[in-house]
Image (tube, rainbow, N blue to C red; front, top):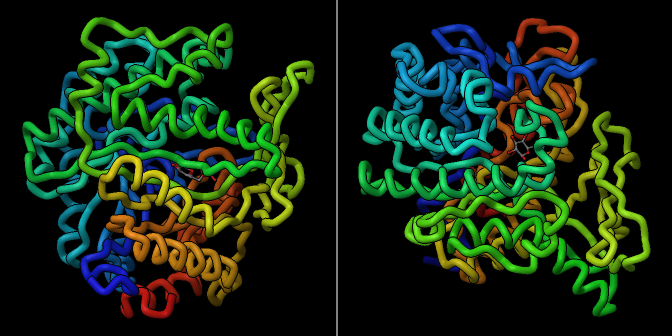
Amino acid sequence: MNKTEFPKDFLWGTSISAYQAEGGLLDGGRKESVADYSTRKEGYADNSVTSDFYHHYKEDIALLGELGAKTFRFSLAWPRIIPDGEGEINPEGIRFYHQVLDELEKYGIEPIVTLFHYDLPLTLQKKYGGWKNRAVIDAFVDFVRVCLTEFGGRIKKFLTINEPDILTMYGGHGLDFAGKEEFAETKLIINHHFALAHARAVRLCHELVPDAMIGPVFGYVPVYPATCDPEDVIAAKNISDIQNSFFQELFLNGIYMENVLQFYEGRCLPPDIEAGDMELLQSAKSDLIALNYYKSDVAKACPEEEEEREMGGNIGGKKGTFVYAKMPGYYEMCPNPMLRRTDWDWEIDATGIRCMLRDVYYRYRLPVIITENGVAAFEHYEGETVEDDYRIDYHRKHLAACKKAIMEGVNLIGYCTWTFIDLLSTGHGFCKRYGLVYVNRTDEEELDLKRVPKKSYYWYRDTIKNGGADL
Ligand code: BGP
């Protein structure tokens, strides 16, 4: 390979998730999921219609074809395939995803599929209390078996659980269905169950579809020290261990980092490790690592006597309203004066993606793929296109940084923008748009859901066509 180029078989792609894009909640035999409740927020659209991919998938995949995408990363909705989470399989749900795969095949686009992207079937939540109960792991493994058996001939890249790290750090997304306090207390138990579910899915995939690859998806956030004061450096290391390495070590090596377990002592219950669990985790060898990257963080030292402060997300998109967390004795998060931020106060940092790629690849030596990378903005369509030059700039710089990482030896096999079409944000409604393609609706009104490729769509199409030569 010429080291100054992206590999010939590089997977140029783009990404969505089922609960954020599909809509059609009770169509085709789908039943409710916890996400159908967690997305109901005053003043914002919920997931009942969202981008209506369920009814527009042919049109959307045709646009993917015109884009020249080599891959499409989406998730299989558990409540569509097994509406009660366990037991009966819904043939209509299976048929829907076969139809999606038919369309992708038509355009020669390789599917990359996430098995769990937050849509836990409501029946399982009600019956078992959700992921804190090991019964949900068994139900998940049965669901995975159905997916592998049904689709294993057509899908050769599977991802297990989307961002167990971000889920454990910040909750939400239906994990706190029984209340925030219960989640805060049981989060390491839930995470342990995610890890076990992941490990069993990996092993099952190797058994049933040996020619497929499977791995975890992390939401990695690199952390820089605020200064070269060694106390700031250790503070940055503390939070990076807590939010990044702890999960990578657990999911990839089957190891619990002692310093992070110590951090959680007295804050929540420890993971419920039973006989055989660690052996299972260690035996499940992933084939690839998927990484979602949006931003970097900065941390400085925080003396013991300071008062603790929880992170407060900027939900409304009003710049400057983000509240930085403070953990006395460990770290204090702070803004990065060197970087610009989005309206939701997410730092824009292309070099961070290169730091992440080198860190993860040189530690684990597995092929890596970027499954999410993108920038959100408030956008309006006024009968022409959407001139999203800032998004072009964002992807251009992040892809250029990826190219440098490839030149440095990182085995990066693909890159997916988040998102393909505008869809429902995890916490900020429909107005926080990431798409290459505008979907004509607002939080308040469904409108005609018309698809309008933005300027970034055409830029990405040209970039794919020339194999990233201009980056
Ligand atoms: C990731 C999730 C996605 C996605 C993205 C952007 O953590 O995997 O589902 O939505 O973040 O986040 P948000 O929608 O909150 O802006």
